[in-house]
Image 1 (cartoon, one colour):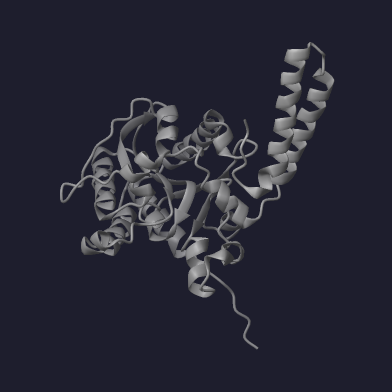
Image 2: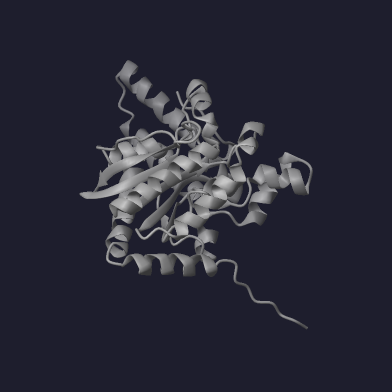
Length: 321
């Protein structure tokens, strides 16, 4: 049984249902309908290509949130099988919305850190729906400092709608925790690669996002605010989220054009949620390429390039009449 998650996927779902019905008919009746099935499969592939190659910004945001999309642990288990999770910020508690620890990637020791969502309600509550709290960022910083001492690269996986805005989070100084991470990440003398694998929302994302390279999955987004949050502020109504997504220029293509993202990592046809293994392979190949380049640089060169990269953000030209 095929279920559509989004309105624009309805033609795909309908074709899949027809293929399934024909296959069941052939199995029960003994009538060969292989030619019809093959024709429908060709049409399905073409329809998928047409739809997913012309997505609107809002549709890409929807795909970035797909509940079957691979999360940080899905990539880690495929790329870093010896990953060992370390817990706690040594100050308050362990934030389950951020995971991290040492691992081996392509024969190279690395420190992997990332935001983690849940697959069902129980796990989402456990992970706080991927909304990190101050102790999560302090745990991440502890691990980054450990990586700096061990002279191993840092890989961060970003997939969060934002930092948790609750009272407890404010009481424990969420803004200060993110700000300290920004400052300290600029001072790391090891390669830092940040990969936006789904949602890259607001300070929740930038708290893990100061890197020598910013990579983004094809259907991920990176923005100062979610489209719904922007719509609620500007139009007083979240129904204008598609309009906000257009205005925010948050898609991978726009971010690459603006110089914020360095590389767009392609996804399997139809999105990363359709093939986790292939998505991990494509991501791993790009990370390996970037690490090979960055690991040849000295600590001071890495710091300087990171600084210059972020100093160049937001440049614009103004015509004065």
